[in-house]
Length: 124
Image 1 (cartoon, one colour):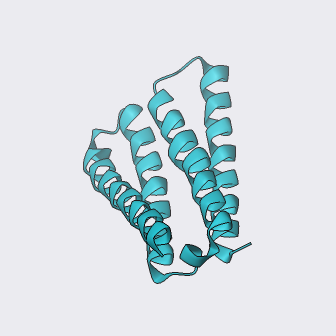
Image 2 (cartoon, rainbow, N blue to C red; image 1 turned 90 degrees about the vertical axis):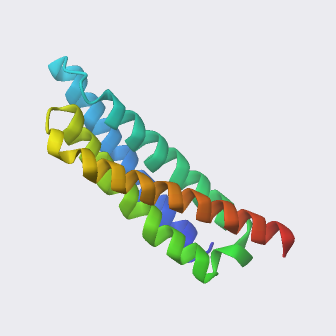
């Protein structure tokens, strides 16, 4: 399995754990203000990164490219910063809004880069 696949799987399980912990916190306190952050952590962290890992495992030629590494360096921190910022924003810290905006753009760029990886692998 390519190293980037292992990286994505290890990162995805960390996001799944964070999503579950946040869900447990919301459930135990009956405070669901951060449900949007919970959803983003699980979907962009756990699910999407797992899909990235599976794709790279099945297409190792694209996994070793510089684009794949750069995409991971942009996407993963983007999701992390966005999730934390979104949690803060949804729980009342309005100053986090520009952080969420910039991190969301980084995530979007990472998704576009992954699309490029898929396209390059398809045409290779």
